[in-house]
Each structure stands twice: as C-alpha cells, then as structure tokens.
Image (cartoon, rainbow, N blue to C red; front, top):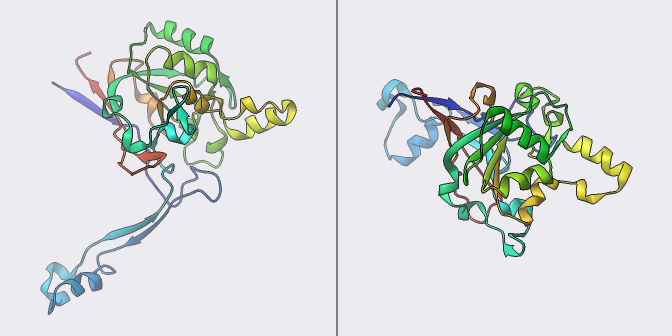
Amino acid sequence: MPRKLIDISVPLRNDVTADPPGNHPTIHYIDHQQGLPRMLRFFDGLKAQDLPDGQGWAVEQVSLSTHNGTHLDAPWHFHPTMNRGERSWTIDEVPLEWCYQPGVKLDFRNLPDGYVVTADDVETELKRIGHTLSPLEIVVVNTSAGAKFGQADYVNSGCGMGYEATMYLLERGVRLTGTDGWSWDAPFVYTAKKYAETKDAGLIWEGHKAGRHIGYCHLEKLHNLDKLPSTGFTVSCFPVKIERASAGWTRAVAIIDDRR
C-alpha cells in the first residue's frame, strides 16, 4: 500500500524561539573527537589510533522541559482531576490507542491572533470539509502560528481553542487533539489583557481546563499542518514514557494513503 509520511513535529534547537524566555531547551553537542577520551576510558589499553580514523562517539547533553518541542500533554498537566473527579492520568498512563488514529484537520489560519475559537466555529469548519466526527479521531488545528515557528512572535501567534470548542470535540468522543501553536489555548498575552479588563479567571486556560470535565490529551507545537488534507490521514504520536509526568515528547507523523 503506497503511503506518504509527513513529519508534523518540530526539532529541538538551541537557536529557535519556540518558548517564552527562560523556558527554552539547551543542547550541548559533543563531537567524535570530544567524545574520544570518554570512550578510551572504557577499554583498558585502547589507543585513539586503534579506532577507525581515530574517532570516538558523538553524544549530546540536553536540558529541557517535557513541554519543549513537539509534545503530548497528559490530563495531569491540566488539573489534578479529570472526568469530574477522577485522578488525572499522567503521560505514562495515557492509552496508546489514543495516539494512533485517523486524523481530521480544522483550518483556522484565517482567524486573528488571540481569537478564542467557539463551538460554532468548529461546527462550521466541519460542515465546510464535509466531515462528521467519530470517537477517538485525532483533531489537529492549523493556525496562523504554524507559519511563524522560529520567529520572535511565534509564542504570541495564532488563535486558541476555548472551553466550548474543546468540549464540542470531547463530547463527540475525541480524546486527542493538537495545534501548531505554542498552546492549545489562545496566546497568554491576549488572555492577560482580557483578564485585566474583566477579572474573569474562567478565561484563563479555558481550553486546557475542559479536561476537568472530560479527560483528554493534546499535542502542541505541531508543524507542516498546511501540507495535510482535511481528512484521509492517520496520526501517530506515541509519547516518551516518563513516569508521573505531565507531558512527553513525541515524533508526531501524519500518514497519508496515496490511493485516496
């Protein structure tokens, strides 16, 4: 069966702005010559000239958060409880079945930065693409932030999914969603302005907090969503298994059957 694989993940890099200040990863690269002394210490009597081209191994030392790079958020990240009172699952408890399912793309690139997507917006987009949601489908949201990855304003770009929009998906059986923005919710700079005006704390992280009522996961910092069709693809996004963690990194991939 002919298939096309599209990488929908972003790389971890030292020199790309993909997180707020102070939250970026740090990668220390050790090349083959720098790694040579460590290799020689493992084998008594071994000399550099005994090895092919006198080269050792290359390794990297990485310091990062589970929320750096393309990652899958577990319900534990959103709130201590889910499903109206159950203990929230951590990333090592997320069902693997959630992480390999048919995908659906909602195209919200036309919406302005900071816009909070509503249930009506989701329903309108589903009608436009002619799709009815099925349980466990993975819904990814293509925002204007996708085209700004690596730019200084990436973190503050794109629309966000509000409580109503998120619940619309969850009530129809969706349990894993994703966005190419920094956050599933609208950029904080816009929410902070609204909060300052209204003092309504319900506006803060409203899409994430929907997990209190129906447990779910979402992917953040996806990439290349503009290359995906609206339907007709499968998403693979198994997270790294980190005990008791709120998230895990993933090499998210979209798999398209070229026979469609």
